Length: 228
Image 1 (tube, rainbow, N blue to C red):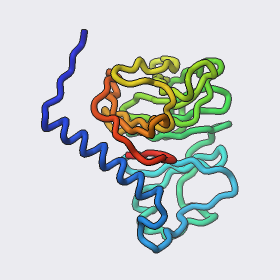
Image 2: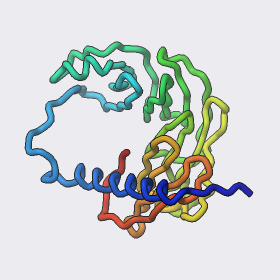
Image 3: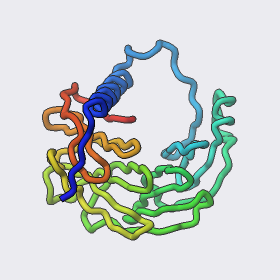
Image 4: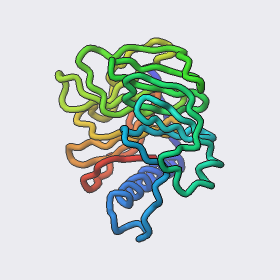
């Protein structure tokens, strides 16, 4: 059996990080909590938009076309409008989710595939979603892909892990110290999964490698989403 210990100082830091994540989420959820000035639109399109940030660029998918925007362009452009300055890299048919992770992109498509792509859109590996799994969100960190979804047989939404490069199909996380059920939202940063459980309106931290509870749960007001 593998046992992991956390020093007391580390535990306080993780608790502080969890509290900060909750506070930031509450700020975004409350219109009056932020500055009164409205943000200028950066990108507009008639088609649905997906976006994700890597180390040096933001990737935006408008319809099935995927654009890359360097941070320098974003900092100097008040409104890219309908004439985007980003570089069109490739297309993904039936694009559902898009996540950037270091130099790779991960996509989930309407036909039930999770793919790892290089920056040119070339596939590096893929895995198929189990029959009946309906994904609602995807998060990626260090090559690990986490899906939030429901399969019709479980209690509400659950969190799944998959690895398209290793062709590991999505499997629900084997939770330790928490229940992988009724999950409303997830976020991931480094080796920590942040999970918002709708029942009881609770947020907690989970080790992204062992799925063991790190800290929490902490009570929160009803939230639409969480982010780190």
